[in-house]
Length: 117
Image 1 (cartoon, one colour):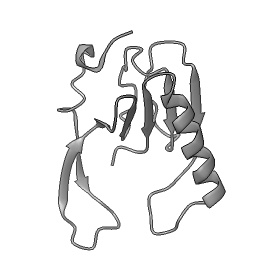
Image 2 (cartoon, rainbow, N blue to C red):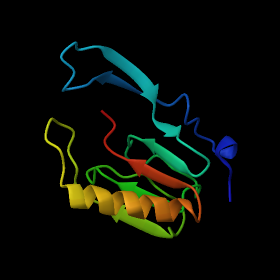
Image 3 (cartoon, one colour):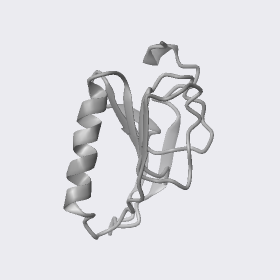
């Protein structure tokens, strides 16, 4: 399996830029497409068809309208619809997803993503 440094896409420099809908200051942001949280957990947005080259065996998608190309048989793939906004999602759903993410991290790199902008 690849390590993060061997990916041909530069996850730190492939950036998401824009303005957050819920930000009353309308401040421009520029952040990496995917950021590493800890040894096996990554978070970020999604750019349709970006090739992840088999690095992530687990993908949890919170935005089903765009998809990465994992380029391997995944060990797990979970897809739910969660929208950015002022309304808090269902608490049971959030706890279930968090539990699943924690289980996935025990066996390999795990990506949790929402939309790109």
